[in-house]
Image (cartoon, rainbow, N blue to C red; front, top):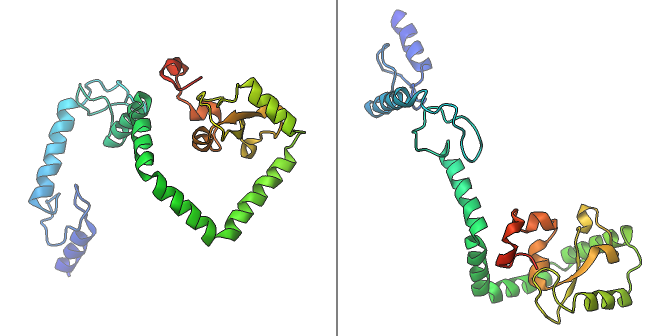
Length: 221
């Protein structure tokens, strides 16, 4: 009976490192295997070595305390390090150039897929168009073709965002309809298809880079 109780206690215990079962292990054992025990001891040594060193130093990404981290560490975890790397890549323009190059190589394939999708799902696209028309009617002021021609002349028939002169200028809502924007002169500007499609339902400050000091690099007109 005593042996049965000890076996039940061992089965209920968990490895201090991986959380696995401790069945069949000594009552004094803390880890289920040699590898787990070595990892546990190594973690204790590292924590003891760096405990209290720059404990108040915050992570450069999320701001939590860097307790137990090495003095030269900048981030509290691999997740924060990856997130900070993504931000640097976006701000440097590398991600934008990469996406443009990828789209240039896949443009025809994407267009063919979009055309096929329109043919295979006419009812879905009809519902999307009807929903957009309803939003325009709900937030609409008088906006005539004459107003549109005046806007084109005002912007010299160029995209208001990138300055590209193209015949395919589209009516772009600065504040998207889904975000409460109106369908009127004060909220419509001409935009080229790449800028209009890239902005989607974002506000300008969300779409453009956070730092407006980089306008000289071509992000702002």
